[in-house]
Length: 219
Image 1: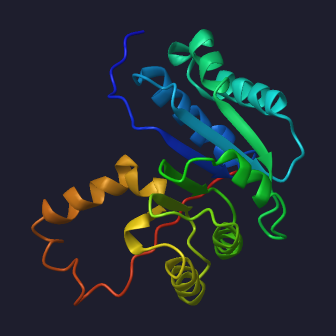
Image 2: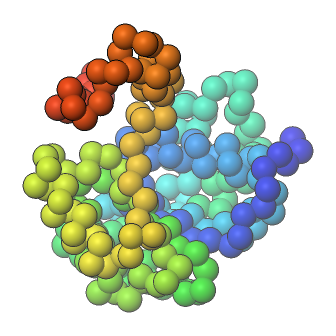
């Protein structure tokens, strides 16, 4: 398959929660697509961090099986998937206790590369993981941190997370992700508001106190 996406600059991506459901169902299969279609992926370095004690080969086989299961058959290329998992790495890390961050540091050898710390974990771990990253000297000017929803459980906990993470990373280094906001049904709310002469004058801060979106899942 010919490359259709531009080449990315060399980067290190550390995926906390790397053996979790979100990583295996969504994030790693999504990275497979990016890797399959991008040019010059030799400088990619994707490190999964999880609590399980796995070697690199065992983890790579788990990801390969996840791609087989969760990537649509029409889009799955066995050879491309094997190339993708060959560039994966794994380190056993306990984000709560702080174990494994020195081992992670060994794998991040170039501070001038872009570093992305993707926290696909429970929100209770956001602050502790960021603290351990800082204590291990892993936060550089070219670092980024991605916080996967939910960002806390209420306004107070979200504020605490923002303040704590903001003390370690500058605001331009912080990315807050809620993949449901990209779904078509949610995006259609914009068209519904501004395309409806009855609703548009009413859907504003004067008349709407708050907006609650409930996503019902079996998982």
